[in-house]
Image (cartoon, protein in one colour):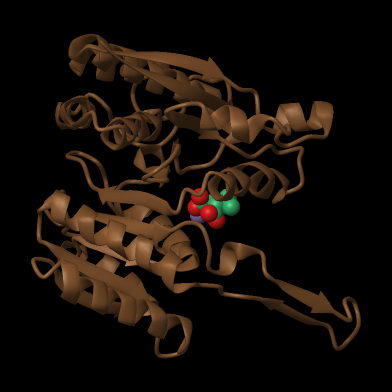
Length: 353
Ligand code: IPM
Ligand code: MN
């Protein structure tokens, strides 16, 4: 019997509700594939912050490092100033655990509405690999003469060769393992970001030419990428991109795959502890109503299994979601419009794994 220690971070708003369904599905798939999950829950989030003034306690990082993976509900509380929880928990964990890959599949399941006219599941199935540890998220920069007419502020896009290279290598390996179109598209903006863009472009080419001659290389400027994602999403297989560009294009990606209710992501440290989450927020107004869509959290659980090396169990979750949606029983991806409740949706997937 294989066994994994999972740290649960339900967080705020609807986070606990969707995570509960994700855990339900994990246990269901575990019992079929001989895997047990020892889950330990942590109360990091807005409520705790309002009570204690602390986002993450001192001991949190060391504790979380003792787990095999982290499963997150949502971070963000309406009574806490925007940015505090995001920086103090989400970004802090990504950086402290060096989760340098943000993996975001963009996949349209059957019967799920996409706003793209004439596009179906055969057109929308690609993966965005977002660099998750550096770039404009590094927090470097500063401001001077703040509040005066001549105020100056900078925010630096910081990339070193090793940080770019480890991300690009992961992306090539991932493209090879996925074995779909064997096409890795680098998305950047090297017509304007001549220094950092050039570093990414050269690294993409050098690593590909040297070690991944079986993978085709392509390049899009990020603005053009948003255009192609709408016009010809079938063109993409795997996209690798810098932190901020990945943040932006994956919101677009979530919309074309049917919305935040179905969009999952993983913050991955291939050599360490990774963290999986539904990428929609805490949706406070839907809290406690049993109407939020847990599919994104459930799919994030599947990504967790894949990263842990449990490919068969991971595929079983994906297939169960596929089956449930193909059956037409789930009417919509939107909260309150699914035609069933949060817990019933979890039960349905658990019954199908
Ligand atoms: C995301 C979010 C975060 C980000 C915020 C909440 C800090 O938008 O996970 O995409 O910008 O990375
Ligand atoms: Mn984002």
